[in-house]
Image (cartoon, rainbow, N blue to C red; front, side, top):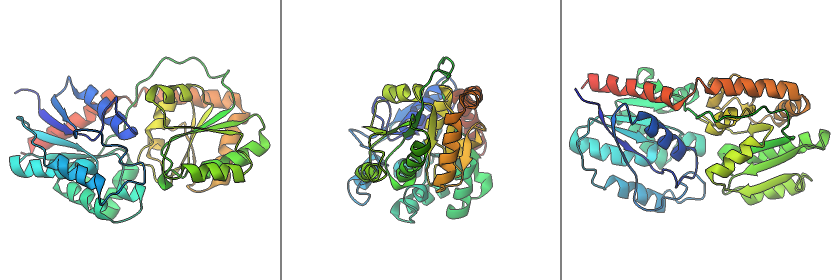
Length: 352
């Protein structure tokens, strides 16, 4: 018997990426290529940033999703691996025509992004119900699938994201820089990062901050920085290329993710690969694979500032946690993620 023939449906792929979805899809596909007969299909043209905020879900984006569903996906396949709600209509249409099983891989949920049970929520739920198995990137996301989408636990497999581990020198010489990387949207709570920065800056005049990303809240966040009196302490470089983001991570002392709801938080794993410790909220799935991360209650700016300040004031502790974080990435590789996904494929095919 040959390798499983898998059709992977994605929404974005390097070099055209807008966030973690494209990075994860490409990295996983690369790790799977020697394990399955893999075909990756994407929408034609530029899909833009589907999760960047300000998109017309009832207009342009939804039309793109439906157009992708209407595309002919020729080929002989054993199963469909679909990534996020954007590919659900295409996966369900192909499953209907070909009788193929669906594995739905969830990197984020509409409840994370908007906290609404809207049309996107309904598409997600339909996709989870139609899928033979659902892959969640964290136990946090799996629990939300069970609670809010009523998906039985036995149908969900948790497969954390992975990361490559670049060679990295020690962190002792790194300057006092706190980094935010993410979309400027309500889900990511960039305002909390600014408020945290104001508290930290008051006690640590040498501290500096950078907020990498773009989105609907960018101008509001800049105004808040001015109101807090720290506009000259925070850089806003906007959306950066992958190589530029890696350079920011390599130059950081601490990464801070203040997200209200973060299914995983891949950038924290990428920071760990550079030996950079992270401060994250207790609504971030990445803490499940990074025990080195300092975890604070979501929305607790004072606790966040305390955790960040403690790391900036103690280079020895920071380096120790950074080394631990880098070690932890060795157990969170994309090859390991691919092996877990392959096990899901075999389970699905064994029941057909």
